[in-house]
Image (spheres, rainbow, N blue to C red):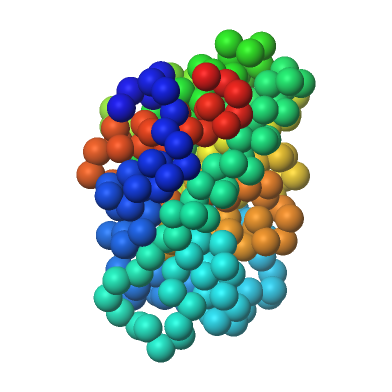
Length: 263
């Protein structure tokens, strides 16, 4: 289903999410989810995504409770391995909340910055959303040239900022590329975005700096869900962020844009 095609209904999208394992019984195993929750709770900043969580999430069970509520993983603390889930109803609920944010951005002709740490899965989701907002008069921000972070270059492809190393688009959880962008904008006297649409540390860093942010996150990436629960991040959309084909995200994107009145 091309992104520009008619958007699916809620019921049809939920069926698609489950069938393609974007939600429902996802590929990320339970033991990996719990490992990441534990490491975040133990203060490993790699899992904080640029957010300042302090000591508020030092109990792994508190993290699990939020993930069950906002992502739909099993809330059973004795379920330690095997299958875990993302609730597709929660995915679509979050898409609806994100659509409201995008609708306001379009109405106000906001400056919007898009970025991804998962270009293999989510690049076209961000790209299509940026294109739709531009047609409604939004400024899709162009980042400064020559930025470096984490031994790579920060640049834009299809209106989406990402990290490049050795001519390869890089999967990263790091907040440093977004920090490089925001610091450069400030250094050159350019305004920060009114809205960031991103994932991983790109979203976490922006939200920590009090920029309204919509983020996408997998069930083994709890930081953005915790930030949403605290009000630091506006919306976190739960989904498997790298399924077999990036085309599987097209119906999700079409639903989001239609709900935001951007199609």
